[in-house]
Length: 56
Image 1 (cartoon, rainbow, N blue to C red):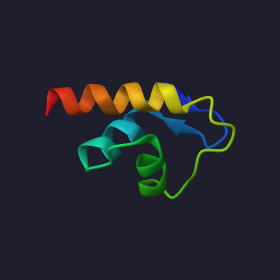
Image 2 (cartoon, rainbow, N blue to C red):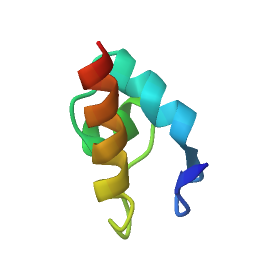
Image 3 (spheres, one colour):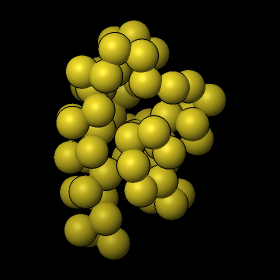
Image 4 (cartoon, one colour):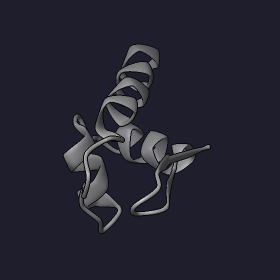
């Protein structure tokens, strides 16, 4: 599933970034070499990161 249309970031990429230590959407995007643009994706990215942190 696509999380960020502006940057073409997929859910699995955000999950990997979270598993690698990203604790926020901005940190995850930076780990992927991108940055949030319009910001509509940030709440969904945060939810994914929170899910990954709960599993760990």
